[in-house]
Length: 222
Ligand code: PRP
Image (cartoon, rainbow, N blue to C red; front, side, top):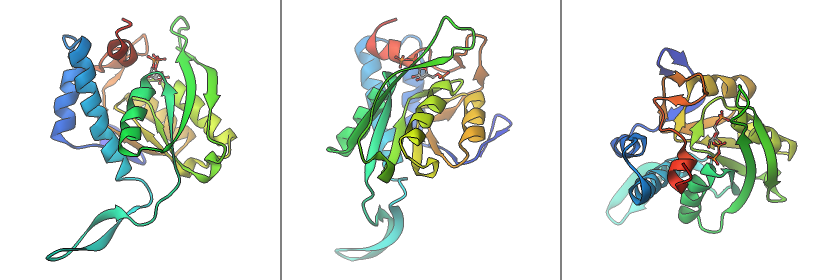
């Protein structure tokens, strides 16, 4: 995929007017409090739907309607799915997937950027993953991809626990090109689903234009 003069492998940007509309709401610095949560949750739900219908077991096949036949994406067989969030912003997206797939296996990885460090290096604090995760298709969720330090560390944790990169889908809301380049370089097999590829990172490693700090805005910890 070509965006802003960059070329990325295995990246799908959801081309939907509803995603663009809700993204404008959550990007807008004047959207706050309850409104922010409502718009963000609506957006997460659409992203969750778009990711679920792109899982590897969803393939085009024919079904019968009461009046004929039609071909389109259906669950051909059900893979074991595990949804892993990068705490805390990832939890918002994870909950949207869980509401659509109740009972899905859940994993948590707590990685925080060290905002005092000039390169915003990530630190791993905690992980809890299902025991059979190596047999699962893993949907790794985090709305923001900036330097990709957090996502790269989370993927390394998954790989150390036996998950093959080709079985990982990274679901995201906004990517910086720098982060996508890093992910593509380290893990070219990973499928990435996102709502937008923005212009760049600023000197503080924030995505431009981005939306600021998603977790702080959603949880009102600004
Ligand atoms: C944000 C975001 C990602 C990370 C992206 O989390 O949710 O996890 O930063 O940055 P990176 O690609 O440069 O690693 P943050 O550490 O702010 O924690 P939060 O989810 O609690 O807000």
